[in-house]
Length: 407
Ligand SMILES: [Zn+2]
Image 1 (cartoon, rainbow, N blue to C red):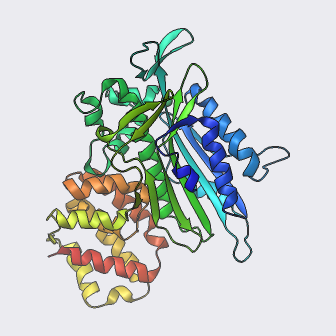
Image 2 (spheres, rainbow, N blue to C red):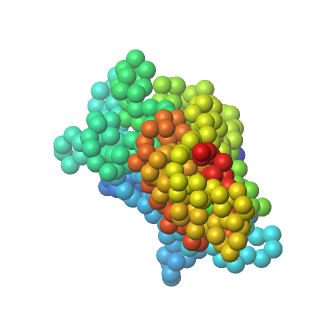
């Protein structure tokens, strides 16, 4: 994928990116290739979808039926990755493997922005004359920056403010981001963040199949003539030996750092990160260290007779008898939820006992410790899974929780 890396930050024709993806994937020598495409629902993304189909999918994917090869698709408002999608997609494209064989799963995540070049001196991004009227593109990202209220906006914003960094602030600040470029940079940041969600989902998913994952955040530039595209970066996760480490090469997610240059009417966007390879972080342990470093991870004191009964059983080792740990967990969880849900939610997330889709929520909890309602949602999900826990796992989690809550 070296030649794809060379495209990071450079505006190119849509078919150049898909062709490099095609050649790069074939060179890797995979036994099969699967693909997922995430785009905005906006009709202007048709060109992006067609380029992916014609430049990549139709050459390398297995036939779904006679003369039909198809990527797994998500098209929604703003091009949001949906938690769990990569697991289903991988399941579809996975076949039994012979020794040494592997598959590639490509996840291309596009956001989009229109360019208006009617003013020759200064191109503007975010609006274009569609069907003879000016309209926004991407309308979903524009609505988010306009502080509109809607479930999809909540979803987009959750990614934009993830890990305690509000990436919408520099986008709204003319001193940090030139308003002419605001929507271009918003689209780039959004693609990066939605791709990161896909990466977190992959890292948390142990499919048992040898798969090399390639995740590409991209921005389609909707033009009056043919659309173009900026590849923001490339994530690779080499799961051929079961590893889950993510390596990223490309632009960062701070819009204040982006710089645009023009050569031959094509843009190049750069920042202080492009050109360097970076390792992805383990968000489950990161949440725990954020919480501990914030100095709020004191042992939580709960004076509750019901919890004392659970504690006595654990102290006397009774939780190891006949799957008693699960019964005790079911008894203790409502008490934590009632009195102090945040430490339990953080601990259970760090231990991998609840889904990765809670990652942004739990990051927020680890920093702010205030959102008890959100912590209760995490505990609720765990409560529903208690019956399915292995007895040893239930014992270990119970012991950890009882250490966290003193009397
Ligand atoms: Zn859109």
